[in-house]
Image 1 (cartoon, rainbow, N blue to C red):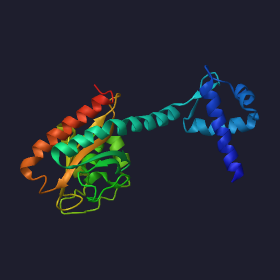
Image 2 (cartoon, rainbow, N blue to C red; image 1 turned 90 degrees about the horizontal axis):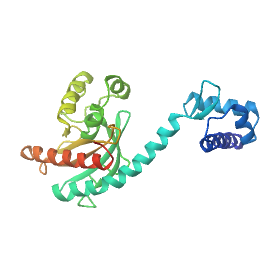
Image 3 (cartoon, one colour; image 1 turned 30 degrees about the vertical axis):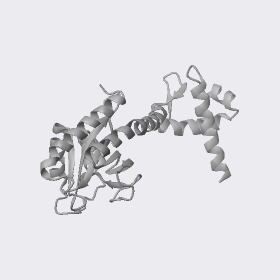
Image 4 (cartoon, one colour; image 1 turned 180 degrees about the horizontal axis):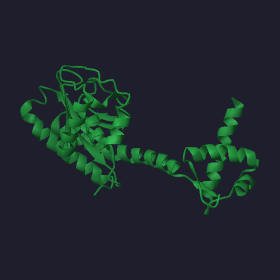
Length: 251
Protein backbone atom coordinates (compact mmCIF):
# COMPACT_ATOMS: atom_id res chain seq x y z
CA UNK A 1 0.00 0.00 0.00
CA UNK A 2 2.76 2.45 0.95
CA UNK A 3 4.59 1.67 -2.29
CA UNK A 4 1.43 2.42 -4.31
CA UNK A 5 1.01 5.74 -2.51
CA UNK A 6 4.65 6.59 -3.20
CA UNK A 7 4.22 5.86 -6.91
CA UNK A 8 1.16 8.14 -7.09
CA UNK A 9 3.01 10.82 -5.18
CA UNK A 10 5.91 10.68 -7.64
CA UNK A 11 3.55 10.84 -10.62
CA UNK A 12 2.06 14.04 -9.21
CA UNK A 13 5.58 15.42 -8.71
CA UNK A 14 6.26 14.94 -12.41
CA UNK A 15 2.99 16.59 -13.43
CA UNK A 16 3.61 19.57 -11.16
CA UNK A 17 7.15 20.05 -12.50
CA UNK A 18 5.93 19.92 -16.11
CA UNK A 19 3.05 22.30 -15.35
CA UNK A 20 5.39 24.83 -13.70
CA UNK A 21 7.88 24.81 -16.58
CA UNK A 22 7.66 27.46 -19.29
CA UNK A 23 9.09 25.07 -21.86
CA UNK A 24 8.95 21.31 -22.48
CA UNK A 25 11.43 19.31 -20.38
CA UNK A 26 13.79 16.50 -21.21
CA UNK A 27 14.04 13.32 -19.16
CA UNK A 28 17.25 14.45 -17.42
CA UNK A 29 15.70 17.82 -16.51
CA UNK A 30 12.70 16.10 -14.95
CA UNK A 31 15.01 13.79 -12.99
CA UNK A 32 16.97 16.75 -11.59
CA UNK A 33 13.81 18.69 -10.73
CA UNK A 34 12.13 15.77 -8.96
CA UNK A 35 15.16 14.00 -7.51
CA UNK A 36 14.08 10.68 -9.02
CA UNK A 37 16.14 8.18 -10.94
CA UNK A 38 15.93 8.11 -14.71
CA UNK A 39 14.35 4.63 -14.71
CA UNK A 40 11.61 5.72 -12.29
CA UNK A 41 10.80 8.88 -14.25
CA UNK A 42 10.80 6.98 -17.54
CA UNK A 43 8.46 4.30 -16.19
CA UNK A 44 5.98 6.80 -14.76
CA UNK A 45 6.10 9.23 -17.65
CA UNK A 46 5.60 6.41 -20.16
CA UNK A 47 2.39 5.41 -18.40
CA UNK A 48 1.16 9.01 -18.32
CA UNK A 49 2.09 9.39 -21.98
CA UNK A 50 0.09 6.30 -22.90
CA UNK A 51 -2.96 7.90 -21.27
CA UNK A 52 -2.21 11.33 -22.83
CA UNK A 53 -1.67 13.08 -19.50
CA UNK A 54 1.84 13.82 -20.75
CA UNK A 55 2.83 14.48 -24.35
CA UNK A 56 6.16 13.46 -25.88
CA UNK A 57 7.49 15.94 -28.42
CA UNK A 58 9.56 15.10 -31.53
CA UNK A 59 12.74 16.30 -29.78
CA UNK A 60 12.16 13.79 -26.92
CA UNK A 61 11.00 16.45 -24.47
CA UNK A 62 7.81 16.22 -22.46
CA UNK A 63 4.94 18.59 -21.69
CA UNK A 64 1.47 18.45 -20.15
CA UNK A 65 -0.90 16.40 -22.31
CA UNK A 66 -4.37 17.25 -23.56
CA UNK A 67 -6.03 14.68 -21.31
CA UNK A 68 -5.03 16.51 -18.14
CA UNK A 69 -6.26 19.81 -19.56
CA UNK A 70 -9.48 18.16 -20.72
CA UNK A 71 -10.09 16.54 -17.33
CA UNK A 72 -9.55 19.76 -15.40
CA UNK A 73 -11.67 21.69 -17.90
CA UNK A 74 -14.54 19.24 -17.44
CA UNK A 75 -14.42 19.80 -13.69
CA UNK A 76 -14.39 23.58 -14.12
CA UNK A 77 -17.21 23.39 -16.65
CA UNK A 78 -19.33 21.40 -14.21
CA UNK A 79 -18.75 23.95 -11.47
CA UNK A 80 -19.77 26.77 -13.81
CA UNK A 81 -22.62 24.66 -15.13
CA UNK A 82 -24.15 24.13 -11.70
CA UNK A 83 -23.75 27.78 -10.75
CA UNK A 84 -25.37 29.02 -13.94
CA UNK A 85 -28.01 26.28 -14.12
CA UNK A 86 -29.63 26.77 -10.72
CA UNK A 87 -31.42 30.05 -11.57
CA UNK A 88 -32.66 28.49 -14.83
CA UNK A 89 -33.99 25.43 -13.03
CA UNK A 90 -35.69 27.61 -10.45
CA UNK A 91 -37.25 29.59 -13.29
CA UNK A 92 -38.69 26.42 -14.85
CA UNK A 93 -39.97 25.25 -11.48
CA UNK A 94 -41.73 28.51 -10.58
CA UNK A 95 -42.99 29.43 -14.06
CA UNK A 96 -44.21 26.01 -15.17
CA UNK A 97 -44.92 24.52 -11.76
CA UNK A 98 -42.94 21.42 -12.73
CA UNK A 99 -39.88 19.61 -11.40
CA UNK A 100 -36.69 20.76 -13.13
CA UNK A 101 -33.57 18.66 -13.65
CA UNK A 102 -30.02 19.13 -14.90
CA UNK A 103 -28.23 16.04 -16.18
CA UNK A 104 -25.13 14.86 -18.02
CA UNK A 105 -24.45 11.81 -20.15
CA UNK A 106 -22.30 8.97 -18.84
CA UNK A 107 -22.15 6.15 -21.37
CA UNK A 108 -25.72 4.96 -21.86
CA UNK A 109 -26.94 6.59 -18.63
CA UNK A 110 -27.93 10.06 -17.53
CA UNK A 111 -26.64 11.33 -14.18
CA UNK A 112 -28.80 13.92 -12.43
CA UNK A 113 -26.59 16.79 -11.21
CA UNK A 114 -29.31 19.07 -9.86
CA UNK A 115 -33.03 19.05 -9.14
CA UNK A 116 -35.51 21.73 -8.10
CA UNK A 117 -39.00 20.94 -6.93
CA UNK A 118 -41.81 23.07 -5.56
CA UNK A 119 -42.48 20.41 -2.99
CA UNK A 120 -39.45 19.28 -0.97
CA UNK A 121 -41.24 16.12 0.06
CA UNK A 122 -41.97 15.15 -3.54
CA UNK A 123 -39.16 12.68 -4.28
CA UNK A 124 -40.78 11.21 -7.41
CA UNK A 125 -38.16 8.76 -8.73
CA UNK A 126 -35.13 11.02 -9.02
CA UNK A 127 -32.61 12.53 -6.65
CA UNK A 128 -29.27 14.27 -7.24
CA UNK A 129 -26.77 11.59 -8.26
CA UNK A 130 -29.49 9.32 -9.63
CA UNK A 131 -28.73 7.42 -12.84
CA UNK A 132 -31.37 6.54 -15.39
CA UNK A 133 -31.21 4.89 -18.83
CA UNK A 134 -30.57 7.58 -21.41
CA UNK A 135 -32.74 5.91 -24.06
CA UNK A 136 -35.94 6.52 -22.07
CA UNK A 137 -34.93 9.88 -20.59
CA UNK A 138 -35.68 13.21 -22.28
CA UNK A 139 -32.28 14.56 -21.25
CA UNK A 140 -30.55 11.38 -22.36
CA UNK A 141 -32.18 11.46 -25.78
CA UNK A 142 -31.13 15.09 -26.24
CA UNK A 143 -27.51 14.31 -25.45
CA UNK A 144 -27.37 11.07 -27.45
CA UNK A 145 -28.85 12.93 -30.43
CA UNK A 146 -25.82 15.25 -30.37
CA UNK A 147 -23.35 12.38 -30.80
CA UNK A 148 -21.87 11.21 -34.07
CA UNK A 149 -22.89 7.78 -35.37
CA UNK A 150 -19.67 6.25 -34.05
CA UNK A 151 -19.98 7.95 -30.65
CA UNK A 152 -23.59 6.81 -30.35
CA UNK A 153 -22.73 3.19 -31.11
CA UNK A 154 -19.92 3.30 -28.56
CA UNK A 155 -22.15 4.86 -25.90
CA UNK A 156 -24.91 2.31 -26.44
CA UNK A 157 -22.81 -0.82 -26.91
CA UNK A 158 -23.55 -2.11 -23.39
CA UNK A 159 -27.17 -0.95 -23.33
CA UNK A 160 -29.73 -3.69 -22.71
CA UNK A 161 -32.84 -1.70 -23.76
CA UNK A 162 -35.11 -2.88 -20.97
CA UNK A 163 -38.84 -2.34 -21.58
CA UNK A 164 -40.00 -0.35 -18.54
CA UNK A 165 -43.44 0.49 -19.96
CA UNK A 166 -45.35 -0.29 -23.18
CA UNK A 167 -44.04 3.04 -24.55
CA UNK A 168 -40.33 2.24 -24.11
CA UNK A 169 -38.32 2.01 -27.34
CA UNK A 170 -36.27 -1.18 -27.16
CA UNK A 171 -34.94 -1.48 -30.71
CA UNK A 172 -31.65 0.31 -31.40
CA UNK A 173 -32.39 1.03 -35.07
CA UNK A 174 -35.79 2.49 -34.20
CA UNK A 175 -34.16 4.52 -31.43
CA UNK A 176 -31.52 5.85 -33.79
CA UNK A 177 -34.24 6.97 -36.22
CA UNK A 178 -36.02 8.72 -33.36
CA UNK A 179 -32.81 10.56 -32.43
CA UNK A 180 -32.79 12.15 -35.89
CA UNK A 181 -36.15 13.71 -35.04
CA UNK A 182 -34.77 14.92 -31.70
CA UNK A 183 -31.72 16.43 -33.41
CA UNK A 184 -33.94 18.26 -35.90
CA UNK A 185 -36.47 19.65 -33.42
CA UNK A 186 -34.00 20.46 -30.64
CA UNK A 187 -35.88 18.79 -27.78
CA UNK A 188 -37.01 15.38 -26.60
CA UNK A 189 -39.70 13.87 -24.43
CA UNK A 190 -39.94 10.88 -22.14
CA UNK A 191 -43.60 10.13 -22.82
CA UNK A 192 -44.32 7.59 -20.06
CA UNK A 193 -41.37 5.52 -21.25
CA UNK A 194 -39.68 5.07 -17.87
CA UNK A 195 -42.70 5.35 -15.60
CA UNK A 196 -46.38 5.26 -16.53
CA UNK A 197 -48.22 8.46 -15.75
CA UNK A 198 -45.06 10.56 -15.99
CA UNK A 199 -43.74 12.86 -18.70
CA UNK A 200 -40.47 14.75 -19.02
CA UNK A 201 -39.45 17.29 -21.67
CA UNK A 202 -35.78 18.18 -22.12
CA UNK A 203 -33.41 20.27 -24.23
CA UNK A 204 -29.60 20.22 -24.65
CA UNK A 205 -27.20 22.76 -23.14
CA UNK A 206 -24.11 23.80 -25.10
CA UNK A 207 -20.83 25.28 -23.89
CA UNK A 208 -18.55 27.86 -25.53
CA UNK A 209 -17.11 25.20 -27.86
CA UNK A 210 -20.55 24.25 -29.17
CA UNK A 211 -20.42 20.90 -27.39
CA UNK A 212 -23.57 19.52 -25.76
CA UNK A 213 -22.34 19.14 -22.18
CA UNK A 214 -25.66 18.73 -20.36
CA UNK A 215 -29.42 18.91 -20.68
CA UNK A 216 -32.22 20.40 -18.63
CA UNK A 217 -35.77 19.17 -18.32
CA UNK A 218 -39.21 19.85 -16.88
CA UNK A 219 -41.13 16.85 -15.60
CA UNK A 220 -44.44 16.02 -14.03
CA UNK A 221 -47.43 13.75 -14.20
CA UNK A 222 -49.58 13.39 -17.30
CA UNK A 223 -52.11 15.51 -15.42
CA UNK A 224 -49.52 18.29 -15.03
CA UNK A 225 -48.35 17.87 -18.64
CA UNK A 226 -51.43 16.87 -20.67
CA UNK A 227 -51.26 16.62 -24.45
CA UNK A 228 -52.39 20.21 -24.99
CA UNK A 229 -49.59 21.56 -22.77
CA UNK A 230 -46.64 19.74 -24.38
CA UNK A 231 -45.95 22.47 -26.94
CA UNK A 232 -45.85 25.32 -24.42
CA UNK A 233 -43.62 23.34 -22.04
CA UNK A 234 -41.14 22.34 -24.75
CA UNK A 235 -40.89 25.91 -25.98
CA UNK A 236 -40.15 27.18 -22.49
CA UNK A 237 -37.60 24.45 -21.77
CA UNK A 238 -35.83 25.09 -25.09
CA UNK A 239 -35.78 28.83 -24.43
CA UNK A 240 -34.33 28.25 -20.95
CA UNK A 241 -31.71 25.83 -22.33
CA UNK A 242 -30.70 28.49 -24.87
CA UNK A 243 -30.37 31.05 -22.09
CA UNK A 244 -28.18 28.71 -20.05
CA UNK A 245 -26.06 27.92 -23.10
CA UNK A 246 -25.44 31.62 -23.70
CA UNK A 247 -24.39 32.02 -20.07
CA UNK A 248 -21.81 29.30 -20.70
CA UNK A 249 -20.41 31.16 -23.70
CA UNK A 250 -22.32 29.47 -26.53
CA UNK A 251 -23.08 31.68 -29.53
